[in-house]
Amino acid sequence: MGQDIDFDVNEAKGANAVNYVRALLKSSGYDVIDFGIETHKLMDSALNKNYKTDTNCMLHSMPDLVVVDKVTNEAEFVEVKYRETYNDGKFRFKYSRMKNYLDYWQSAILVLVIKDTPSHCHAVRIKDINWHRHFAGPDTSSKGRVPNDVWILRKPILKEIKEIFPKVTDNNLLRVSKLLP
Image 1 (cartoon, one colour):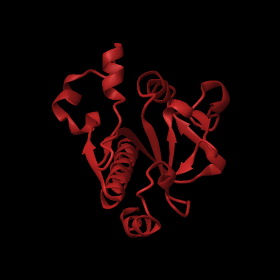
Image 2 (image 1 turned 120 degrees about the horizontal axis):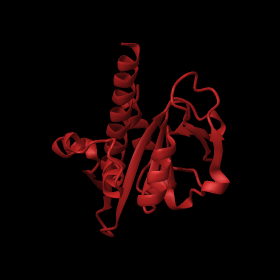
Image 3 (image 1 turned 90 degrees about the horizontal axis):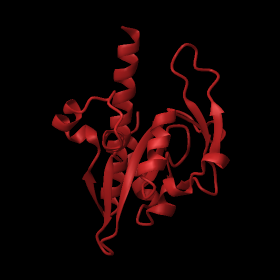
C-alpha cells in the first residue's frame, strides 16, 4: 500500500510540474499544447507498457508539451520532470527513460523543475546530453527498488529556462512559482 501512495504522490508532483511549466510558458507569450501520452488516455490504456516495440517505446516517452513561439512559429518538444533538490547536478532517471529520450527525442528540451533552486526551472537540450560524458552510473542508494541511473547535468548544458525560452521573465517566474508545492 505504501508504494501505491508514493506512486500517486510522485505522479501528482509530476503533473504539478507540467502545469507549472505550461503556465510559465503561456504567461510568457508562448503557445503551449499538451502532447504527452498522459493526455491521450485511450491510447495510454490500449498500449501495453511491457510490449517493447520501438513505436511503443516512443509513444510512452512522448514529451509532455509542444511549445510554439508565436512570432517565429518555431515549435519545441518539452519534457518536464520534477526534482526536490539540485544535488550538485546529479539527477536520477530510469535507464529506459533516458535511453528513450536519447533514442527518439533528440530535438526535445528536458525541463527540470527543481524545488530547492531560486529560479525553480532549468532546461537542457536532449541533443546536448552525451551518454559517455554525463552518465555517472547506477544509483547505489536505491534500497530494494529498481535502481535508477545517475546523470550529471550541470552548466554549461543545464541552463536557466529563460536562456532557452527568452520570453520568460523573472517576473513571470516569480508569479508562477506560487504553483509549486
